[in-house]
Amino acid sequence: CFKVLEIVKSACEDCISIVGGDLFVAPVAPFPDDQEYADVFGTRMTQHSSGGASRGLQLDVERMFIEKTQVYPHSLDQVEFTRNSVVSGILLVALSSFLECVRSSVFSSLGYRQMKVDAIFLRYLFPHFVKDEFGTAEANARSCLFNALDDIMLKAGQRCVDPEVVADDDYYDAEKDEIVTPYLLVRQFLLSSDEEEAVSVMKRISFS
Image (cartoon, rainbow, N blue to C red; front, side, top):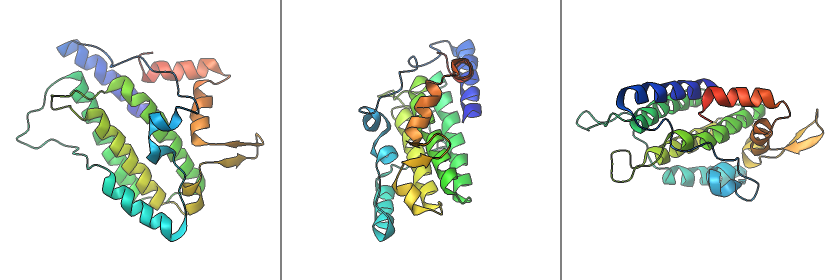
C-alpha cells in the first residue's frame, strides 16, 4: 500500500502544478486511541463476527449494505479536473484492481491479518488526500473509497481458509509473548521505537 500512496502524493503535486489549489485535504490526524477506533474505522472494519452458518448469513447481509462504487465515470458524465477528482480516481482504480486480485486469491490466517493491517492503514490516510465535496460530482469521493475497502475486506474474509481468523482480530504473537491486533500493529508502526524509519515512510507517502 506504500507504493500506491507514493503515486497519489506525486499525483497531488502534479495536479497542483497545473490547476493550483491545496496539496492535501488536511494534515495527517493522530492515530485514534482504543475508544475512538470503531468510530474512525467503522463497524465493518472493527467488529468481531460469529462463525459457521451465521457467518455466511452475516456476509450476505453486509454485502447488501455496501454501497456499489462506480470506478469509471460514464461516457456522458462531466468529470472535473481537480486534485480531489484525480486522486480519488487513481485510488478507486487501484482498489478495484486490488479487489480483482483478492477474488482470485486464497488467504491464510497470516495473509488475512496482513490485509486487515493494510486496510486500516489506507483508511487512516485516505482523509489526508480525499474529501467528500457535497454539491459537486465528488460528493461521495471519500465515502466511495471507504466502501471499496469494506468490499475488499469482505471478499478477503470469504477467501480466507480459517474462518476463526475472520471472526476474531486478536492473535498471539509468540515472539513477543503478547496478544496483538491489526489495529495495534498499525499503531505500533506509527509510534515505532525506530522513529526514523516511521518518519521516513510517512514523508514518502504523505505531506506531514
